[in-house]
Image 1 (cartoon, rainbow, N blue to C red):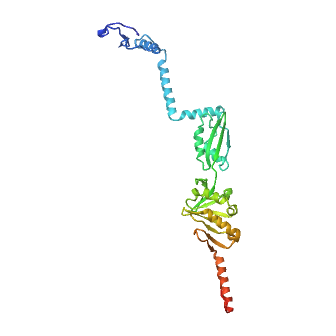
Image 2 (cartoon, rainbow, N blue to C red; image 1 turned 30 degrees about the vertical axis):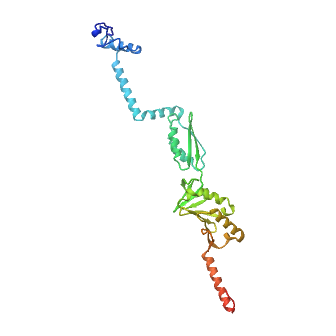
Image 3 (cartoon, rainbow, N blue to C red; image 1 turned 90 degrees about the vertical axis):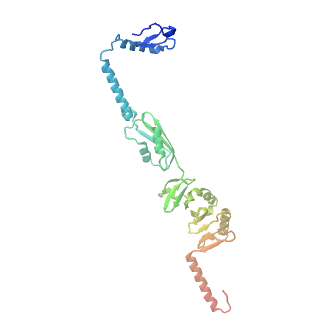
Length: 313
Protein backbone atom coordinates (compact mmCIF):
# COMPACT_ATOMS: atom_id res chain seq x y z
CA UNK A 1 0.00 0.00 0.00
CA UNK A 2 1.18 3.47 -0.86
CA UNK A 3 1.23 5.35 2.48
CA UNK A 4 2.84 8.29 4.13
CA UNK A 5 4.20 7.30 7.51
CA UNK A 6 5.69 9.58 10.11
CA UNK A 7 8.23 8.69 12.65
CA UNK A 8 11.52 9.64 14.04
CA UNK A 9 13.86 10.35 11.18
CA UNK A 10 17.14 10.05 13.04
CA UNK A 11 18.26 12.82 15.27
CA UNK A 12 16.26 15.49 13.41
CA UNK A 13 12.94 13.79 13.99
CA UNK A 14 11.81 14.64 10.41
CA UNK A 15 8.89 12.58 9.01
CA UNK A 16 9.93 9.85 6.48
CA UNK A 17 8.11 8.44 3.42
CA UNK A 18 7.89 4.68 3.14
CA UNK A 19 7.30 3.23 -0.37
CA UNK A 20 7.53 -0.54 -0.91
CA UNK A 21 9.45 -0.83 2.33
CA UNK A 22 11.98 1.82 1.37
CA UNK A 23 12.33 4.93 3.49
CA UNK A 24 12.84 8.35 1.95
CA UNK A 25 13.01 11.76 3.52
CA UNK A 26 10.42 14.16 2.02
CA UNK A 27 12.87 16.95 2.52
CA UNK A 28 15.26 15.36 0.03
CA UNK A 29 13.00 13.48 -2.38
CA UNK A 30 9.77 14.36 -4.15
CA UNK A 31 8.24 11.85 -6.56
CA UNK A 32 7.40 13.49 -9.93
CA UNK A 33 3.71 13.90 -10.62
CA UNK A 34 3.73 11.70 -13.70
CA UNK A 35 5.24 8.81 -11.73
CA UNK A 36 2.84 8.93 -8.81
CA UNK A 37 0.02 6.92 -10.41
CA UNK A 38 2.32 4.14 -11.70
CA UNK A 39 3.96 4.05 -8.27
CA UNK A 40 0.58 3.61 -6.58
CA UNK A 41 -0.29 0.82 -9.02
CA UNK A 42 2.97 -1.01 -8.37
CA UNK A 43 2.54 -0.56 -4.63
CA UNK A 44 -1.00 -1.96 -4.71
CA UNK A 45 0.13 -4.86 -6.89
CA UNK A 46 2.93 -5.73 -4.50
CA UNK A 47 0.61 -5.47 -1.45
CA UNK A 48 -1.93 -7.76 -3.11
CA UNK A 49 -4.65 -5.11 -3.36
CA UNK A 50 -4.68 -5.11 -7.17
CA UNK A 51 -5.63 -8.14 -9.25
CA UNK A 52 -4.34 -8.18 -12.87
CA UNK A 53 -6.90 -8.90 -15.61
CA UNK A 54 -7.56 -12.44 -16.68
CA UNK A 55 -5.03 -13.77 -19.26
CA UNK A 56 -2.70 -10.84 -18.50
CA UNK A 57 0.23 -13.24 -18.36
CA UNK A 58 -0.64 -14.75 -21.74
CA UNK A 59 -1.02 -11.30 -23.26
CA UNK A 60 2.27 -10.11 -21.79
CA UNK A 61 4.02 -13.24 -23.09
CA UNK A 62 2.54 -12.74 -26.56
CA UNK A 63 3.61 -9.10 -26.59
CA UNK A 64 7.12 -10.06 -25.52
CA UNK A 65 7.46 -12.78 -28.14
CA UNK A 66 6.03 -10.56 -30.88
CA UNK A 67 8.40 -7.75 -29.98
CA UNK A 68 11.34 -10.14 -30.00
CA UNK A 69 10.31 -11.52 -33.40
CA UNK A 70 9.94 -8.04 -34.88
CA UNK A 71 13.29 -6.97 -33.48
CA UNK A 72 14.98 -10.06 -34.89
CA UNK A 73 13.35 -9.49 -38.28
CA UNK A 74 14.59 -5.90 -38.27
CA UNK A 75 18.13 -6.97 -37.41
CA UNK A 76 17.97 -9.60 -40.15
CA UNK A 77 16.80 -7.10 -42.74
CA UNK A 78 13.41 -8.71 -43.23
CA UNK A 79 11.29 -5.71 -42.26
CA UNK A 80 12.39 -3.57 -45.25
CA UNK A 81 11.83 -6.54 -47.56
CA UNK A 82 8.32 -7.03 -46.25
CA UNK A 83 7.59 -3.30 -46.52
CA UNK A 84 8.87 -3.33 -50.11
CA UNK A 85 6.61 -6.24 -51.01
CA UNK A 86 3.52 -4.73 -49.40
CA UNK A 87 3.91 -1.22 -50.83
CA UNK A 88 4.77 -2.58 -54.28
CA UNK A 89 1.46 -4.47 -54.39
CA UNK A 90 -0.38 -1.38 -53.23
CA UNK A 91 0.57 0.44 -56.46
CA UNK A 92 4.01 1.83 -55.61
CA UNK A 93 6.05 -0.59 -57.71
CA UNK A 94 8.49 1.18 -60.09
CA UNK A 95 6.84 1.00 -63.51
CA UNK A 96 8.57 3.84 -65.43
CA UNK A 97 12.19 5.00 -65.68
CA UNK A 98 12.91 8.24 -67.55
CA UNK A 99 16.57 8.81 -68.48
CA UNK A 100 17.99 12.09 -69.84
CA UNK A 101 21.42 13.51 -70.61
CA UNK A 102 23.00 10.30 -71.88
CA UNK A 103 24.81 10.22 -75.22
CA UNK A 104 27.56 7.68 -74.69
CA UNK A 105 25.99 5.74 -71.83
CA UNK A 106 23.31 3.22 -72.81
CA UNK A 107 20.01 3.10 -70.97
CA UNK A 108 20.54 -0.61 -70.42
CA UNK A 109 23.67 0.10 -68.35
CA UNK A 110 21.76 2.69 -66.33
CA UNK A 111 18.86 0.32 -65.69
CA UNK A 112 21.28 -2.35 -64.49
CA UNK A 113 22.73 0.09 -61.97
CA UNK A 114 19.24 0.92 -60.66
CA UNK A 115 18.94 -2.74 -59.64
CA UNK A 116 15.19 -3.05 -60.25
CA UNK A 117 13.54 -6.46 -60.06
CA UNK A 118 10.03 -5.74 -61.38
CA UNK A 119 8.51 -5.44 -57.90
CA UNK A 120 10.79 -2.77 -56.48
CA UNK A 121 8.74 -0.37 -54.37
CA UNK A 122 9.27 3.35 -54.82
CA UNK A 123 8.66 3.81 -51.09
CA UNK A 124 11.72 1.87 -49.96
CA UNK A 125 13.93 2.58 -52.99
CA UNK A 126 17.32 4.08 -52.02
CA UNK A 127 17.81 6.84 -54.60
CA UNK A 128 21.19 7.95 -53.21
CA UNK A 129 22.67 4.45 -53.41
CA UNK A 130 21.40 4.16 -57.00
CA UNK A 131 22.97 7.52 -57.86
CA UNK A 132 26.34 6.37 -56.54
CA UNK A 133 26.15 3.19 -58.63
CA UNK A 134 25.34 5.18 -61.79
CA UNK A 135 28.24 7.58 -61.20
CA UNK A 136 30.48 4.53 -61.31
CA UNK A 137 29.81 4.12 -65.05
CA UNK A 138 32.80 5.20 -67.22
CA UNK A 139 31.19 8.11 -69.07
CA UNK A 140 29.09 9.49 -66.19
CA UNK A 141 30.46 12.62 -64.52
CA UNK A 142 27.44 13.37 -62.31
CA UNK A 143 23.98 11.91 -61.82
CA UNK A 144 20.69 12.64 -60.08
CA UNK A 145 17.96 10.11 -59.27
CA UNK A 146 14.51 11.38 -58.30
CA UNK A 147 11.45 9.44 -57.17
CA UNK A 148 8.19 10.54 -58.79
CA UNK A 149 5.22 9.01 -56.98
CA UNK A 150 3.47 6.75 -57.37
CA UNK A 151 5.53 4.62 -59.77
CA UNK A 152 8.28 6.48 -61.69
CA UNK A 153 11.99 7.24 -61.46
CA UNK A 154 13.78 10.12 -63.18
CA UNK A 155 17.50 9.77 -63.91
CA UNK A 156 19.49 12.75 -65.17
CA UNK A 157 23.17 12.36 -65.95
CA UNK A 158 26.02 14.61 -67.04
CA UNK A 159 28.66 12.90 -69.14
CA UNK A 160 32.37 13.52 -69.50
CA UNK A 161 33.68 15.47 -72.50
CA UNK A 162 36.07 13.48 -74.72
CA UNK A 163 39.11 15.46 -75.82
CA UNK A 164 41.57 13.10 -77.51
CA UNK A 165 42.58 9.51 -78.16
CA UNK A 166 45.65 8.58 -76.14
CA UNK A 167 47.99 5.88 -77.40
CA UNK A 168 50.37 4.47 -74.81
CA UNK A 169 52.14 1.35 -75.95
CA UNK A 170 49.57 -0.74 -77.78
CA UNK A 171 46.64 0.61 -75.77
CA UNK A 172 44.16 3.24 -76.99
CA UNK A 173 41.92 5.18 -74.63
CA UNK A 174 39.62 8.21 -74.80
CA UNK A 175 40.73 10.93 -72.39
CA UNK A 176 39.38 14.21 -71.06
CA UNK A 177 41.15 17.56 -71.44
CA UNK A 178 43.04 17.07 -68.21
CA UNK A 179 44.25 13.64 -69.31
CA UNK A 180 41.94 11.50 -67.20
CA UNK A 181 40.97 8.28 -68.97
CA UNK A 182 37.27 7.89 -69.76
CA UNK A 183 37.06 4.54 -71.52
CA UNK A 184 38.96 2.34 -73.99
CA UNK A 185 38.79 3.52 -77.60
CA UNK A 186 36.66 1.25 -79.75
CA UNK A 187 36.33 3.28 -82.94
CA UNK A 188 33.13 4.91 -84.12
CA UNK A 189 32.62 8.64 -84.16
CA UNK A 190 35.46 9.21 -81.69
CA UNK A 191 37.95 8.43 -84.44
CA UNK A 192 37.89 12.13 -85.41
CA UNK A 193 39.44 13.14 -82.06
CA UNK A 194 43.11 14.19 -82.01
CA UNK A 195 45.56 11.32 -81.51
CA UNK A 196 48.17 11.96 -78.83
CA UNK A 197 50.97 9.43 -78.46
CA UNK A 198 53.43 8.65 -75.71
CA UNK A 199 53.67 8.64 -71.93
CA UNK A 200 52.75 12.01 -70.46
CA UNK A 201 51.02 13.03 -73.69
CA UNK A 202 47.48 12.86 -72.30
CA UNK A 203 48.18 15.31 -69.47
CA UNK A 204 50.20 17.77 -71.58
CA UNK A 205 48.30 17.67 -74.87
CA UNK A 206 45.56 20.27 -74.31
CA UNK A 207 47.65 23.44 -74.60
CA UNK A 208 49.79 22.09 -77.44
CA UNK A 209 46.80 20.90 -79.51
CA UNK A 210 45.15 24.30 -79.03
CA UNK A 211 48.36 25.96 -80.23
CA UNK A 212 48.42 23.90 -83.43
CA UNK A 213 44.71 24.55 -84.04
CA UNK A 214 45.52 28.25 -84.29
CA UNK A 215 47.23 27.36 -87.60
CA UNK A 216 44.46 25.68 -89.63
CA UNK A 217 46.72 25.04 -92.59
CA UNK A 218 48.95 22.88 -90.43
CA UNK A 219 46.33 21.47 -88.07
CA UNK A 220 44.33 19.98 -90.94
CA UNK A 221 47.38 17.89 -91.95
CA UNK A 222 48.31 16.58 -88.49
CA UNK A 223 47.57 12.91 -87.91
CA UNK A 224 49.24 12.53 -84.52
CA UNK A 225 50.81 14.54 -81.71
CA UNK A 226 53.80 12.62 -80.34
CA UNK A 227 55.26 13.37 -76.92
CA UNK A 228 58.98 12.58 -76.87
CA UNK A 229 60.68 11.78 -73.55
CA UNK A 230 58.00 13.88 -71.81
CA UNK A 231 59.95 16.99 -72.89
CA UNK A 232 58.98 18.00 -76.43
CA UNK A 233 56.62 17.27 -79.32
CA UNK A 234 56.75 15.78 -82.80
CA UNK A 235 54.00 16.24 -85.39
CA UNK A 236 53.14 13.33 -87.66
CA UNK A 237 51.41 14.54 -90.84
CA UNK A 238 48.94 12.61 -92.97
CA UNK A 239 51.49 12.23 -95.80
CA UNK A 240 54.02 10.61 -93.44
CA UNK A 241 56.24 13.64 -92.77
CA UNK A 242 57.43 14.06 -89.17
CA UNK A 243 58.11 17.57 -87.90
CA UNK A 244 60.46 17.51 -84.95
CA UNK A 245 59.93 20.56 -82.79
CA UNK A 246 62.42 21.88 -80.22
CA UNK A 247 61.86 21.69 -76.47
CA UNK A 248 61.80 25.49 -76.32
CA UNK A 249 60.70 27.96 -78.95
CA UNK A 250 57.86 25.91 -80.44
CA UNK A 251 56.05 28.96 -81.79
CA UNK A 252 59.07 30.22 -83.76
CA UNK A 253 59.71 26.74 -85.18
CA UNK A 254 56.09 26.34 -86.29
CA UNK A 255 56.17 29.79 -87.93
CA UNK A 256 59.34 28.81 -89.85
CA UNK A 257 57.79 25.58 -91.14
CA UNK A 258 54.68 27.43 -92.33
CA UNK A 259 56.84 30.06 -94.09
CA UNK A 260 58.86 27.42 -95.95
CA UNK A 261 55.68 25.61 -96.92
CA UNK A 262 54.13 28.81 -98.34
CA UNK A 263 57.26 29.75 -100.27
CA UNK A 264 58.63 26.36 -101.37
CA UNK A 265 55.87 23.83 -100.71
CA UNK A 266 58.07 22.13 -98.10
CA UNK A 267 55.38 19.88 -96.62
CA UNK A 268 54.29 18.62 -100.05
CA UNK A 269 57.70 17.30 -101.02
CA UNK A 270 58.95 13.72 -100.85
CA UNK A 271 60.66 14.06 -97.50
CA UNK A 272 60.52 12.04 -94.28
CA UNK A 273 61.56 14.47 -91.57
CA UNK A 274 61.80 18.19 -90.94
CA UNK A 275 64.02 18.65 -87.90
CA UNK A 276 63.89 22.06 -86.18
CA UNK A 277 65.58 21.10 -82.91
CA UNK A 278 68.74 23.04 -83.77
CA UNK A 279 68.49 26.81 -83.42
CA UNK A 280 70.81 27.72 -86.33
CA UNK A 281 69.71 25.27 -89.00
CA UNK A 282 66.87 23.20 -90.39
CA UNK A 283 67.62 19.57 -91.23
CA UNK A 284 65.58 17.71 -93.85
CA UNK A 285 65.78 13.97 -94.34
CA UNK A 286 64.51 12.43 -97.54
CA UNK A 287 62.42 9.31 -97.77
CA UNK A 288 64.26 6.13 -98.91
CA UNK A 289 62.60 6.41 -102.32
CA UNK A 290 63.59 10.04 -102.70
CA UNK A 291 67.13 9.23 -101.57
CA UNK A 292 67.35 6.46 -104.18
CA UNK A 293 66.12 8.78 -106.91
CA UNK A 294 68.60 11.44 -105.85
CA UNK A 295 71.46 8.93 -105.88
CA UNK A 296 70.47 7.74 -109.35
CA UNK A 297 70.22 11.30 -110.60
CA UNK A 298 73.66 12.20 -109.28
CA UNK A 299 75.15 9.08 -110.87
CA UNK A 300 73.63 9.95 -114.24
CA UNK A 301 74.99 13.48 -114.00
CA UNK A 302 78.43 12.11 -113.19
CA UNK A 303 78.40 9.88 -116.26
CA UNK A 304 77.28 12.74 -118.47
CA UNK A 305 80.06 14.93 -117.11
CA UNK A 306 82.71 12.36 -118.00
CA UNK A 307 81.63 12.39 -121.62
CA UNK A 308 82.22 16.13 -121.80
CA UNK A 309 85.84 17.01 -121.06
CA UNK A 310 86.29 20.12 -118.99
CA UNK A 311 82.82 19.82 -117.42
CA UNK A 312 82.63 19.68 -113.64
CA UNK A 313 79.78 18.28 -111.60
